[in-house]
Amino acid sequence: MKSATLRTFISVHTWVGLIAGFGLFIAFYAGAVTLFHEELHAWETPPAKVAAPRHEPQALIDAVLQAHPQAKDAFYVRLPNEHEPELVLEFAERHFRLDANGKLEEFKERSQLVDFIYRLHYTAGLPRSWGIYVLGVVCVLYGLALASGVIIYAPNFFKDLFALRIGKNIKRMWQDAHNAIGILSLPFHLMYAWSSAVLALGVLLLAPFQYLVFDGKLLQLVGQDISAAAPPKAAGVSAPLAPARQLLAEVERAAPGMEVETLIYRQAGDANAQLQAYGHAHQNTVSSVAAVVLNASSGKVERVVMPDNYSAGTRFLRSLQTLHFGSFGAAAVQWMYFVLGMAGAFLFYSGNLLWIEARRKRHKLVQPRSGKLMAQATLGVCLGCVAGVSAVFLANKLGPANQLPLWESRSYYTVFFGCVLWAFARPPARAAHELLKLCAVLTLAVPLSHWWRTGVNPVLALLQGDGVVAGVAAISVLFATLYWKMSRAVLARGQHGDPHSVWSLRKVMPAQGEIQQAA
Image (cartoon, rainbow, N blue to C red; front, side, top):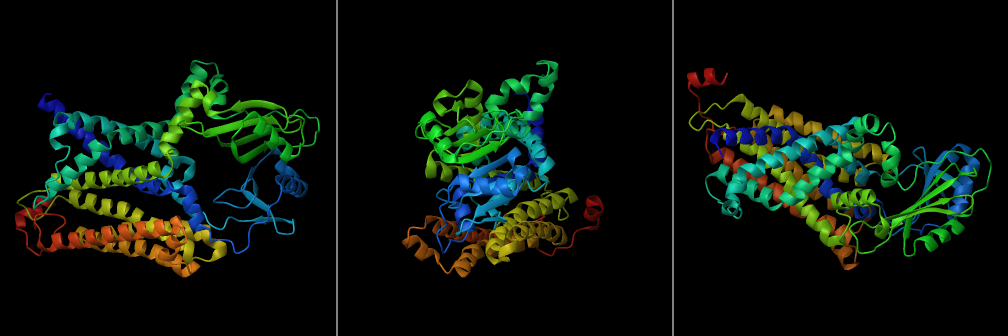
């Protein structure tokens, strides 16, 4: 490859990586946490002292429709499961359940810890209405950075694959770690770049074809691959709902072995009332999502979607979703994705540090202002995200019980923006040392706060077979130790390392010419 062409690819890889890196760090760090969505939902919700009453779904449906007739247009019922023992009906972001005496009560979700971190994953903390599209564009840039990186480093693939030269040359050590992680996890990153762009921007990408090629009928053609069924049109003829128990029996006959989790009702009380039952059917396929569509009045089965009879479009979309969220292979895949997700976050963090080192003037004390600004931005955004996520876990245990969702979201943004401001107010080395210590303290406090709130220490939880509490505690201690060691390493480098660096704390007066040149 010609040297000019190689320089072009290096420039593309560098700048695209810098532009996309901040959003991708947040997406990967938060995404790694939400791989354990169901398990963390059990962690965020305190164990009930009294077992949840076992009510029939139909009793809850009848009570809600009687009290709130407007719910008939669309509502869904969440059936009890291992991690959520309550029967819940939701419509228009309102939640209902039956108390022990069978009386209808509206309630607010006690916590949204995992849901909030999941929103961070697909919006990077931006407003949900447009943040997902911004992150979709970022993922397209992410794919471009991957392609250019492969072109740059493929010739030295085997030579650099296991090279990790630890020594005084900090830049070379970080470069080796960056390259090794990037090369070893390349298939994972290619899958994520592609699937993220499709899932975030899929509807927008279809828009031109909807009118220019398919005369406005494209969404009708692909709709059955996106959802089990289109929303029904009301017939205008009243008809009572069939009992939920009868409808579930029809689902079982139509899809044997399906574990129903959610019931979605539309146009309840109409002759065209529809029920979409969603769940999982394990058939040794990548995706296990299954659905059965019925007429909710007559009980007639209208469509059955099982992994072994997916259409080509459904198989593509469901498999892509399953690969993206790691919802196959049970714990082994979850932990593998967790490690790869955290490694991906490190990849973007280290990429910014390498850019700073590449612009460093080796024999000049005063460094380019761009290097200092990039160092401060990287510390503020990346370490602000780390500290903010730990703060959300703390707010879940230390905040007022009736206002947890508000405290969880505010704790993240307060800590995140506080870290950004602190990073720009302090010299980079000082900010890195202090923010890493903050990350360590907040992360270590997570299992302690759970112990204080519930009275269950992690060791006892492990002996009792509660792997979720013990697992969160173990990961928190591991990461807190890592952040603490990193903070000490940054401080040591600042005090004893090369003074010609934005990370230096050594007080050496620069020459007048250097000051003028930097300015």
